[in-house]
Each structure stands twice: as structure tokens, then as C-alpha cells.
Length: 122
Image 1 (tube, helix red, strand yellow):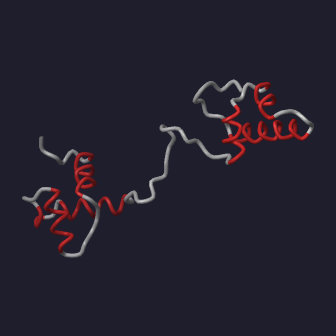
Image 2 (cartoon, one colour):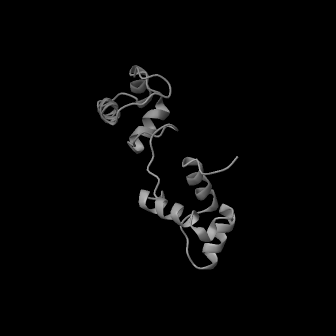
């Protein structure tokens, strides 16, 4: 296939390859031999045939469904930096807000937001 081990293969090329191998099978060729001819591992063909899917590598950009919007992040930071919570840790802030029935995010999220704004003391 020429993309190398672990390389991203465009969906169009996957579809065309699967179609070629299926066509060869319909004309009497064995699947494994057709894959060998294209230098495509048989297991890869089976995976491609099952589902042509988007980039699944670890470095691929992913959509995080529960990610806070910029507005939610700002609100969380404003509340955390308010006079009321000025002498509390992020853990205490989140716990106090939860007792009141308000949830902006986790303690870890608050630490992350404060670190991004360089608002944490060493």
C-alpha cells in the first residue's frame, strides 16, 4: 500500500482497495492472495471491510464531548477568584459549591484552569 506501518491511509484509498479485493474475489481469486498482491495484511483488509473509520491514531484530534466552553471556563474562574473563595483551595471551592448544589467542574479542572492562567502559586 505504500503508507508504511501505522501510517494514515485516506478513507477513499481504503474504499477503493476494499472494492478491488472484493471484485477479485467475485472473479474467483482468494482473498488472502488478493491482499498479498496489494501488499495489504489480510487482517487490515478485514478491519477495513468491517468499517471504514476516521483516523484512530493516538495523536489524532478528538472531539471531547464534555469539554467546557470558553464561557463556562470564564464563569468557573470568576467564581473561584471571587472574594468569597479567596483563601480556599480548589478542592474546598468545588466542595463548597457542591454543597450549595452548584457544579461548574471538577477540582482537577479548576487546577487546570488556574495553571493555564498562571494563577497558581508554586
